[in-house]
Image (tube, rainbow, N blue to C red; front, side):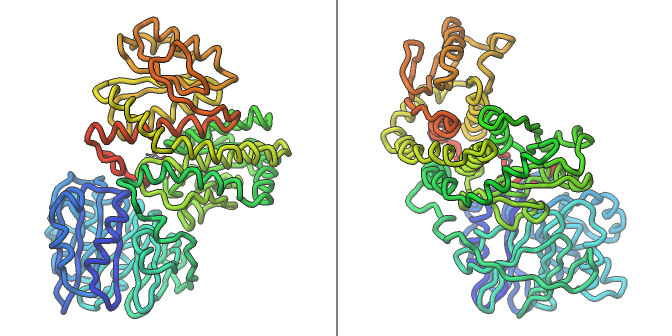
Length: 587
Ligand code: M6R
């Protein structure tokens, strides 16, 4: 986790860094800080809390100089305190570091630094001291930095500000880092939105890359131990796509954007979809691997592939993959699904697959991400930047693509496209103001609840799981999702008078799921029906169209909106839920 950004050029660095930090806050918002360099003096401001909460925005903005580095933190080593906020410096104050990642051998490193004054509990501060330690043995700054970074175990993306030489060193191993390239200016950063307002040119760094940033860029790779060349790429996103625009929150903006992202799925290149379908047909053992919401997209695929393509696939949560990797063979196919392409558990699974020489195909949203670089074949969901920590449009884009792939395996891609084409108007209505108002009234009824349940059958079961995740992660109301038929095997014991239960109804599961709803209602449960038609069993009804295999897309949208409304009514920040970060880059 954590977001890092740097600037070197002719403009004032601090406002650019501040703007970049705001764009990276989705990566962590426990604390923030900036260090700039002006006339050989380093200026540092940092504190705990979100940038806007801290009230130190103005003092951050006022830091002088045309060169600087900045950090927004998701705490791993050390509590959320001002001392643990980045940037960190060595004893001399000449080497200043911001870091994203985890240094696994930090205890061993710390022992070698017993003559140094360490002022925080972080693993990151040790990097600055380790470089200083290497310089004490006669190396210059660059050689000392290379040598120090080679000693780190774990993963890192670092920016190192060198006071004496007016330069920044950027290096990565396992954590994301790109460099925005402007006219006589550079923006090293964890992610593109940090500099998208300034340039649409980017260099994607590889693991082991070590870049000296000054008037120009000098690339070296620590693993290859030699100078390397890196190409400049063009960014396809528009700057506005990463802005909130007229919306109060990214979450609502991204929910409403689903109309367009589904259209983008329909417009995906047919040859590419058919190619993926071919890989799946030929694979001996297909494993879908993902975490969180993307894992729920995989569970959708399990049903879609079974029903549409009559194809069995194995769905494994990223962190559980090591327990199944012995099944992999050279002709196995591992399909990794991830919005960010940086989820550590998914990357681990992919590395395991590569070690078994299996083919890796990724479905990702962020081009140039670690997963993109590790995969044999990549397919982009093209949902545009998803900034809110909760995944909404990336999820439905994943489901839409998986649906098309299922149809392509069944050699009937056209029918899949038609299924999605019907969704355009339907999703527009689902996100319209009138629907949002209807759902807000429901949120009023639910806002004081402590527990909720969601149930579905067949393809509506993964939807129930995803709905529960959306509701709990942003409203902090404890919500659990179940397969409708499973409730009577235990969870029904939790139903009391007024316990809300969201029931997902589709044509093919209507009879059975309504029986389950009746079981809950007869025990006092409050039934919220998300269904194509109303029913006497429902205490509250949200109409959704019947969209056949695309029901997972239509039925989840009202719950995304409900989660958003509940967050607002309960005083939670929809874009930055507590304890969470968008990319989970730790195992
Ligand atoms: O970037 P990824 O899709 O790999 O992220 C996976 C999960 O961390 C992510 O979906 C998480 O569960 C979100 N908070 C869901 O809203």
